[in-house]
Image 1 (tube, protein in one colour):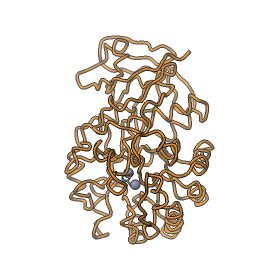
Image 2 (cartoon, protein in one colour):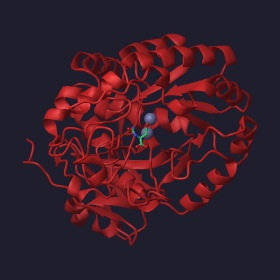
Image 3 (tube, helix red, strand yellow):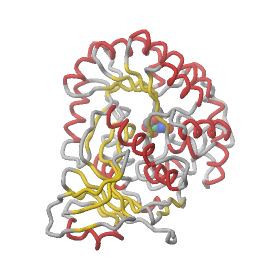
Image 4 (cartoon, helix red, strand yellow):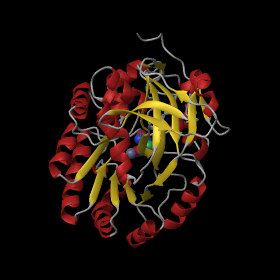
Length: 410
Ligand code: NCD
Ligand code: ZN
Ligand code: ZN
Protein backbone atom coordinates (compact mmCIF):
# COMPACT_ATOMS: atom_id res chain seq x y z
CA UNK A 1 0.00 0.00 0.00
CA UNK A 2 1.26 3.42 -1.01
CA UNK A 3 -0.17 6.81 -0.11
CA UNK A 4 0.88 9.84 -2.12
CA UNK A 5 -0.22 13.34 -3.08
CA UNK A 6 -1.95 13.09 -6.49
CA UNK A 7 -2.53 15.82 -9.09
CA UNK A 8 -5.24 14.70 -11.53
CA UNK A 9 -4.88 17.70 -13.84
CA UNK A 10 -7.06 20.00 -11.73
CA UNK A 11 -6.31 19.65 -8.05
CA UNK A 12 -4.32 17.74 -5.45
CA UNK A 13 -5.76 14.94 -3.32
CA UNK A 14 -4.06 12.25 -1.26
CA UNK A 15 -4.64 8.79 -2.78
CA UNK A 16 -3.97 5.21 -1.72
CA UNK A 17 -2.55 2.74 -4.24
CA UNK A 18 -2.73 -0.92 -3.32
CA UNK A 19 0.21 -2.64 -4.93
CA UNK A 20 0.37 -5.98 -3.22
CA UNK A 21 3.49 -6.25 -1.10
CA UNK A 22 3.39 -6.22 2.64
CA UNK A 23 4.60 -2.76 3.44
CA UNK A 24 2.63 0.42 4.03
CA UNK A 25 4.52 3.34 2.53
CA UNK A 26 3.63 7.00 2.91
CA UNK A 27 5.53 9.11 0.39
CA UNK A 28 6.89 12.51 1.48
CA UNK A 29 5.36 15.70 0.04
CA UNK A 30 8.20 16.30 -2.42
CA UNK A 31 7.06 13.20 -4.31
CA UNK A 32 3.81 13.64 -6.23
CA UNK A 33 1.80 11.29 -8.43
CA UNK A 34 0.44 12.41 -11.80
CA UNK A 35 -1.32 10.46 -14.58
CA UNK A 36 1.34 8.45 -16.44
CA UNK A 37 2.37 9.69 -19.87
CA UNK A 38 0.87 8.56 -23.19
CA UNK A 39 3.07 8.93 -26.27
CA UNK A 40 1.11 8.87 -29.51
CA UNK A 41 4.12 8.79 -31.85
CA UNK A 42 6.98 6.31 -31.35
CA UNK A 43 8.98 3.94 -33.55
CA UNK A 44 9.66 0.70 -31.68
CA UNK A 45 11.22 -0.81 -34.90
CA UNK A 46 11.99 -4.52 -34.25
CA UNK A 47 11.77 -7.00 -37.17
CA UNK A 48 14.35 -6.09 -39.84
CA UNK A 49 15.61 -3.16 -37.75
CA UNK A 50 15.96 -4.76 -34.34
CA UNK A 51 19.56 -3.51 -34.14
CA UNK A 52 18.05 0.01 -33.73
CA UNK A 53 15.34 -0.98 -31.21
CA UNK A 54 12.95 -3.84 -30.50
CA UNK A 55 9.57 -4.10 -28.81
CA UNK A 56 11.19 -5.11 -25.53
CA UNK A 57 13.86 -2.38 -25.33
CA UNK A 58 11.43 0.19 -26.73
CA UNK A 59 8.82 -0.59 -24.09
CA UNK A 60 11.48 -0.47 -21.36
CA UNK A 61 12.52 2.94 -22.70
CA UNK A 62 8.88 4.00 -22.47
CA UNK A 63 8.63 2.91 -18.82
CA UNK A 64 11.92 4.64 -17.98
CA UNK A 65 10.45 7.84 -19.43
CA UNK A 66 7.21 7.60 -17.44
CA UNK A 67 5.19 6.40 -20.45
CA UNK A 68 2.69 3.55 -20.02
CA UNK A 69 0.95 3.69 -23.43
CA UNK A 70 2.31 4.26 -26.92
CA UNK A 71 1.11 4.68 -30.50
CA UNK A 72 3.62 2.80 -32.64
CA UNK A 73 4.31 3.82 -36.24
CA UNK A 74 4.02 1.52 -39.27
CA UNK A 75 7.27 2.49 -41.09
CA UNK A 76 8.83 -0.77 -39.95
CA UNK A 77 10.89 -3.12 -42.13
CA UNK A 78 8.79 -4.43 -43.85
CA UNK A 79 6.29 -1.53 -43.61
CA UNK A 80 2.86 -2.31 -42.16
CA UNK A 81 0.44 -1.60 -44.99
CA UNK A 82 -2.16 -4.35 -44.55
CA UNK A 83 -4.43 -5.65 -41.79
CA UNK A 84 -2.55 -9.01 -41.96
CA UNK A 85 0.80 -7.47 -41.08
CA UNK A 86 -0.84 -5.17 -38.53
CA UNK A 87 -2.29 -8.24 -36.81
CA UNK A 88 1.14 -9.88 -36.77
CA UNK A 89 2.51 -6.75 -35.11
CA UNK A 90 -0.28 -6.63 -32.50
CA UNK A 91 0.40 -10.28 -31.67
CA UNK A 92 4.13 -9.57 -31.30
CA UNK A 93 3.32 -6.75 -28.87
CA UNK A 94 1.07 -8.89 -26.67
CA UNK A 95 2.55 -9.37 -23.23
CA UNK A 96 4.38 -6.04 -23.18
CA UNK A 97 3.94 -4.15 -19.91
CA UNK A 98 2.92 -1.00 -21.76
CA UNK A 99 -0.44 -0.46 -23.48
CA UNK A 100 0.30 -0.83 -27.17
CA UNK A 101 -1.55 0.87 -30.03
CA UNK A 102 -0.61 0.72 -33.70
CA UNK A 103 -1.16 3.29 -36.44
CA UNK A 104 -1.70 1.35 -39.69
CA UNK A 105 0.16 2.35 -42.85
CA UNK A 106 -1.79 3.42 -45.95
CA UNK A 107 -2.81 0.09 -47.52
CA UNK A 108 -2.15 -0.68 -51.18
CA UNK A 109 -5.92 -1.00 -51.62
CA UNK A 110 -7.94 1.60 -49.68
CA UNK A 111 -10.82 -0.91 -49.34
CA UNK A 112 -8.58 -2.72 -46.82
CA UNK A 113 -9.02 0.13 -44.32
CA UNK A 114 -12.12 -1.52 -42.84
CA UNK A 115 -9.91 -4.56 -42.10
CA UNK A 116 -7.85 -2.35 -39.78
CA UNK A 117 -10.94 -1.42 -37.77
CA UNK A 118 -11.93 -5.04 -37.28
CA UNK A 119 -8.58 -5.82 -35.58
CA UNK A 120 -8.67 -2.68 -33.39
CA UNK A 121 -6.41 -0.38 -35.43
CA UNK A 122 -8.26 2.94 -35.32
CA UNK A 123 -5.86 5.27 -37.11
CA UNK A 124 -3.97 5.41 -40.38
CA UNK A 125 -0.57 7.10 -40.79
CA UNK A 126 0.18 9.13 -43.91
CA UNK A 127 3.82 9.75 -44.90
CA UNK A 128 5.09 12.24 -47.50
CA UNK A 129 5.42 9.31 -49.95
CA UNK A 130 1.62 8.79 -49.63
CA UNK A 131 0.87 12.47 -50.33
CA UNK A 132 -0.80 11.78 -53.68
CA UNK A 133 -3.32 9.49 -51.96
CA UNK A 134 -4.31 11.96 -49.24
CA UNK A 135 -7.80 12.71 -50.57
CA UNK A 136 -8.72 9.02 -50.84
CA UNK A 137 -7.27 8.17 -47.43
CA UNK A 138 -9.12 10.96 -45.62
CA UNK A 139 -12.36 9.96 -47.33
CA UNK A 140 -11.90 6.26 -46.47
CA UNK A 141 -10.95 7.15 -42.88
CA UNK A 142 -14.15 9.19 -42.47
CA UNK A 143 -16.20 6.26 -43.78
CA UNK A 144 -14.52 3.91 -41.27
CA UNK A 145 -14.52 6.36 -38.35
CA UNK A 146 -10.72 6.26 -38.21
CA UNK A 147 -8.28 9.08 -37.38
CA UNK A 148 -5.79 10.14 -40.07
CA UNK A 149 -2.37 10.93 -38.57
CA UNK A 150 -0.28 12.90 -41.04
CA UNK A 151 3.43 13.56 -41.32
CA UNK A 152 2.57 16.72 -43.21
CA UNK A 153 5.16 17.86 -45.77
CA UNK A 154 4.41 18.24 -49.50
CA UNK A 155 7.29 16.33 -51.12
CA UNK A 156 6.93 18.15 -54.45
CA UNK A 157 8.50 21.15 -52.69
CA UNK A 158 11.61 19.28 -51.50
CA UNK A 159 15.05 20.11 -52.88
CA UNK A 160 18.35 18.26 -52.65
CA UNK A 161 21.20 20.64 -52.05
CA UNK A 162 24.33 19.25 -50.44
CA UNK A 163 25.35 21.10 -47.31
CA UNK A 164 28.27 21.37 -44.91
CA UNK A 165 26.01 20.63 -41.92
CA UNK A 166 22.43 19.76 -40.94
CA UNK A 167 21.28 23.38 -41.26
CA UNK A 168 20.86 22.64 -44.98
CA UNK A 169 18.02 20.27 -44.10
CA UNK A 170 15.49 23.07 -43.58
CA UNK A 171 16.45 24.50 -46.98
CA UNK A 172 15.83 21.12 -48.57
CA UNK A 173 12.56 20.50 -46.71
CA UNK A 174 11.27 24.08 -46.44
CA UNK A 175 8.65 25.12 -43.90
CA UNK A 176 6.31 26.08 -46.76
CA UNK A 177 6.14 22.37 -47.69
CA UNK A 178 4.60 21.81 -44.25
CA UNK A 179 2.21 24.75 -44.58
CA UNK A 180 1.09 23.68 -48.04
CA UNK A 181 0.36 20.14 -46.84
CA UNK A 182 -1.52 21.47 -43.80
CA UNK A 183 -3.76 23.67 -45.96
CA UNK A 184 -4.69 20.61 -48.00
CA UNK A 185 -5.18 18.41 -44.95
CA UNK A 186 -7.49 20.93 -43.25
CA UNK A 187 -9.47 21.33 -46.46
CA UNK A 188 -9.90 17.55 -46.80
CA UNK A 189 -10.82 17.14 -43.13
CA UNK A 190 -13.61 19.67 -43.57
CA UNK A 191 -14.83 18.29 -46.91
CA UNK A 192 -14.99 14.67 -45.73
CA UNK A 193 -15.81 15.33 -42.08
CA UNK A 194 -12.84 13.27 -40.94
CA UNK A 195 -10.72 13.34 -37.79
CA UNK A 196 -7.27 14.53 -38.87
CA UNK A 197 -4.20 14.86 -36.65
CA UNK A 198 -0.98 16.57 -37.80
CA UNK A 199 2.03 15.12 -36.00
CA UNK A 200 5.41 16.71 -35.20
CA UNK A 201 4.28 20.14 -36.41
CA UNK A 202 7.03 22.76 -36.61
CA UNK A 203 5.26 25.68 -38.33
CA UNK A 204 3.46 28.11 -35.96
CA UNK A 205 1.09 29.00 -38.84
CA UNK A 206 -0.02 25.36 -38.96
CA UNK A 207 -0.91 25.46 -35.25
CA UNK A 208 -3.08 28.55 -35.91
CA UNK A 209 -4.68 26.98 -38.96
CA UNK A 210 -5.53 23.75 -37.13
CA UNK A 211 -7.06 25.75 -34.30
CA UNK A 212 -9.13 27.86 -36.70
CA UNK A 213 -10.40 24.72 -38.44
CA UNK A 214 -11.99 23.51 -35.21
CA UNK A 215 -11.50 19.98 -36.50
CA UNK A 216 -7.79 19.25 -36.91
CA UNK A 217 -5.49 18.55 -33.93
CA UNK A 218 -1.70 18.89 -33.70
CA UNK A 219 1.23 17.66 -31.65
CA UNK A 220 4.76 19.00 -31.28
CA UNK A 221 8.01 17.38 -30.16
CA UNK A 222 10.38 18.64 -27.49
CA UNK A 223 13.21 18.89 -30.04
CA UNK A 224 11.22 21.28 -32.22
CA UNK A 225 10.24 23.32 -29.12
CA UNK A 226 13.69 23.48 -27.52
CA UNK A 227 16.23 23.22 -30.35
CA UNK A 228 16.75 25.19 -33.53
CA UNK A 229 19.01 24.44 -36.47
CA UNK A 230 21.83 26.61 -35.07
CA UNK A 231 21.67 25.66 -31.40
CA UNK A 232 21.55 21.94 -32.10
CA UNK A 233 24.63 21.98 -34.34
CA UNK A 234 26.49 23.87 -31.61
CA UNK A 235 25.51 21.28 -28.97
CA UNK A 236 26.48 18.15 -30.83
CA UNK A 237 29.93 17.09 -31.93
CA UNK A 238 28.90 16.00 -35.44
CA UNK A 239 27.86 18.23 -38.36
CA UNK A 240 24.90 16.09 -39.44
CA UNK A 241 23.63 14.50 -36.19
CA UNK A 242 20.82 17.10 -35.92
CA UNK A 243 19.14 15.87 -39.11
CA UNK A 244 15.50 15.07 -38.33
CA UNK A 245 12.20 15.14 -40.21
CA UNK A 246 10.62 17.61 -40.30
CA UNK A 247 13.83 19.66 -39.91
CA UNK A 248 14.68 21.86 -36.94
CA UNK A 249 13.69 25.40 -37.96
CA UNK A 250 15.33 28.77 -37.31
CA UNK A 251 15.29 30.37 -33.88
CA UNK A 252 12.44 32.84 -34.36
CA UNK A 253 10.17 30.13 -35.80
CA UNK A 254 11.00 27.85 -32.90
CA UNK A 255 10.19 30.60 -30.37
CA UNK A 256 6.83 31.26 -32.06
CA UNK A 257 6.05 27.53 -31.80
CA UNK A 258 7.05 27.50 -28.13
CA UNK A 259 4.84 30.55 -27.52
CA UNK A 260 1.86 28.64 -28.95
CA UNK A 261 2.64 25.64 -26.80
CA UNK A 262 2.78 27.83 -23.72
CA UNK A 263 -0.51 29.61 -24.51
CA UNK A 264 -2.35 26.31 -24.94
CA UNK A 265 -2.89 26.32 -28.73
CA UNK A 266 -1.07 22.99 -29.18
CA UNK A 267 -3.13 19.90 -28.30
CA UNK A 268 -0.41 17.36 -27.55
CA UNK A 269 3.25 16.51 -27.18
CA UNK A 270 4.82 13.38 -28.71
CA UNK A 271 8.38 12.13 -28.61
CA UNK A 272 8.68 10.87 -32.22
CA UNK A 273 11.07 8.38 -30.59
CA UNK A 274 13.13 7.52 -33.71
CA UNK A 275 15.99 5.28 -32.58
CA UNK A 276 18.99 4.79 -34.89
CA UNK A 277 22.36 3.20 -34.15
CA UNK A 278 25.36 5.37 -33.23
CA UNK A 279 27.04 4.59 -36.57
CA UNK A 280 23.93 5.72 -38.50
CA UNK A 281 23.91 9.09 -36.68
CA UNK A 282 27.60 9.97 -36.35
CA UNK A 283 30.47 10.26 -38.81
CA UNK A 284 28.47 10.16 -42.04
CA UNK A 285 27.80 12.70 -44.79
CA UNK A 286 24.54 14.63 -45.16
CA UNK A 287 22.65 12.16 -47.36
CA UNK A 288 23.69 9.10 -45.35
CA UNK A 289 22.97 10.34 -41.84
CA UNK A 290 19.74 8.79 -40.49
CA UNK A 291 16.97 11.26 -39.54
CA UNK A 292 15.54 11.39 -36.04
CA UNK A 293 16.38 11.15 -32.33
CA UNK A 294 15.33 8.79 -29.55
CA UNK A 295 12.88 10.63 -27.29
CA UNK A 296 11.01 8.29 -24.98
CA UNK A 297 13.44 8.84 -22.09
CA UNK A 298 13.71 12.61 -22.43
CA UNK A 299 10.29 13.99 -23.45
CA UNK A 300 8.56 13.74 -20.07
CA UNK A 301 11.58 15.06 -18.18
CA UNK A 302 11.93 18.06 -20.49
CA UNK A 303 8.21 18.79 -20.35
CA UNK A 304 8.08 18.63 -16.56
CA UNK A 305 11.17 20.82 -16.53
CA UNK A 306 9.23 23.53 -18.42
CA UNK A 307 6.71 23.39 -15.58
CA UNK A 308 9.38 23.55 -12.85
CA UNK A 309 10.97 26.54 -14.58
CA UNK A 310 7.61 28.33 -14.63
CA UNK A 311 6.87 28.37 -18.37
CA UNK A 312 3.76 26.18 -18.23
CA UNK A 313 1.53 24.85 -15.48
CA UNK A 314 1.25 21.21 -14.45
CA UNK A 315 -2.24 20.96 -15.95
CA UNK A 316 -0.75 21.73 -19.37
CA UNK A 317 1.85 18.95 -18.96
CA UNK A 318 -0.82 16.39 -18.13
CA UNK A 319 -3.23 17.46 -20.88
CA UNK A 320 -0.50 17.47 -23.54
CA UNK A 321 1.31 14.22 -22.72
CA UNK A 322 -1.38 12.15 -21.01
CA UNK A 323 -5.05 13.16 -21.24
CA UNK A 324 -5.29 14.32 -24.89
CA UNK A 325 -3.13 11.58 -26.47
CA UNK A 326 -4.90 9.11 -24.18
CA UNK A 327 -8.22 10.18 -25.63
CA UNK A 328 -6.89 9.84 -29.16
CA UNK A 329 -5.54 6.32 -28.57
CA UNK A 330 -8.53 5.29 -26.38
CA UNK A 331 -6.28 4.64 -23.43
CA UNK A 332 -8.04 5.05 -20.15
CA UNK A 333 -7.29 4.08 -16.71
CA UNK A 334 -5.22 4.05 -13.72
CA UNK A 335 -1.54 4.59 -14.38
CA UNK A 336 0.49 6.83 -12.13
CA UNK A 337 3.89 8.43 -12.48
CA UNK A 338 5.71 9.33 -9.25
CA UNK A 339 7.80 12.50 -9.59
CA UNK A 340 10.26 14.00 -7.11
CA UNK A 341 9.84 17.75 -7.61
CA UNK A 342 12.74 18.62 -5.31
CA UNK A 343 15.34 16.54 -7.11
CA UNK A 344 16.85 16.79 -10.57
CA UNK A 345 18.17 14.57 -13.36
CA UNK A 346 21.11 14.85 -15.70
CA UNK A 347 20.19 13.39 -19.10
CA UNK A 348 22.72 10.63 -19.71
CA UNK A 349 22.19 8.65 -22.93
CA UNK A 350 24.58 5.92 -21.69
CA UNK A 351 21.93 5.02 -19.11
CA UNK A 352 19.03 4.79 -21.60
CA UNK A 353 17.04 1.55 -21.79
CA UNK A 354 16.69 2.27 -25.53
CA UNK A 355 19.29 0.72 -27.83
CA UNK A 356 19.86 4.25 -29.19
CA UNK A 357 22.19 5.62 -26.52
CA UNK A 358 22.52 9.17 -27.82
CA UNK A 359 20.50 12.38 -27.62
CA UNK A 360 20.77 16.02 -28.62
CA UNK A 361 19.82 16.72 -24.97
CA UNK A 362 22.79 14.85 -23.49
CA UNK A 363 23.97 16.50 -20.24
CA UNK A 364 20.91 18.77 -19.96
CA UNK A 365 19.72 19.11 -16.38
CA UNK A 366 15.99 18.78 -15.68
CA UNK A 367 14.54 20.00 -12.38
CA UNK A 368 12.60 16.79 -11.60
CA UNK A 369 13.27 13.11 -11.03
CA UNK A 370 11.04 10.27 -12.28
CA UNK A 371 10.80 8.07 -9.18
CA UNK A 372 8.51 5.25 -10.22
CA UNK A 373 5.63 4.15 -12.40
CA UNK A 374 2.48 2.29 -11.33
CA UNK A 375 0.10 0.53 -13.73
CA UNK A 376 -2.56 -2.06 -13.06
CA UNK A 377 -1.66 -2.36 -9.38
CA UNK A 378 1.99 -3.04 -10.16
CA UNK A 379 5.18 -1.03 -9.75
CA UNK A 380 6.62 -1.26 -13.29
CA UNK A 381 9.62 1.05 -12.99
CA UNK A 382 11.64 2.50 -10.17
CA UNK A 383 14.67 4.80 -10.09
CA UNK A 384 17.57 3.07 -8.36
CA UNK A 385 17.96 5.89 -5.83
CA UNK A 386 14.45 5.20 -4.52
CA UNK A 387 14.79 1.42 -4.30
CA UNK A 388 15.05 1.57 -0.53
CA UNK A 389 12.02 3.81 -0.15
CA UNK A 390 9.87 1.61 -2.45
CA UNK A 391 11.60 -1.68 -1.62
CA UNK A 392 8.57 -3.53 -0.29
CA UNK A 393 6.73 -2.97 -3.58
CA UNK A 394 9.37 -3.98 -6.11
CA UNK A 395 8.53 -7.24 -7.86
CA UNK A 396 10.53 -9.38 -10.24
CA UNK A 397 9.54 -7.63 -13.47
CA UNK A 398 10.12 -4.08 -12.18
CA UNK A 399 12.47 -2.12 -14.45
CA UNK A 400 15.16 -0.55 -12.29
CA UNK A 401 16.31 2.66 -13.88
CA UNK A 402 19.58 4.36 -13.07
CA UNK A 403 19.74 8.10 -13.45
CA UNK A 404 22.18 10.65 -12.21
CA UNK A 405 20.96 13.40 -9.92
CA UNK A 406 22.37 16.87 -10.40
CA UNK A 407 23.34 18.78 -7.28
CA UNK A 408 20.33 18.86 -4.95
CA UNK A 409 17.79 21.62 -5.41
CA UNK A 410 16.73 23.69 -2.45
C1 NCD B 1 11.43 8.92 -38.33
C2 NCD B 1 12.07 7.54 -38.30
O1 NCD B 1 13.30 7.45 -38.11
O2 NCD B 1 11.35 6.55 -38.43
N1 NCD B 1 12.44 9.91 -38.56
C3 NCD B 1 12.36 11.23 -38.28
O3 NCD B 1 13.29 11.97 -38.66
N2 NCD B 1 11.36 11.75 -37.60
C4 NCD B 1 10.36 8.95 -39.37
C5 NCD B 1 9.38 10.09 -39.18
O4 NCD B 1 8.77 10.22 -38.12
O5 NCD B 1 9.18 10.88 -40.11
ZN1 ZN C 1 7.34 11.75 -39.42
ZN1 ZN D 1 8.12 9.47 -36.46
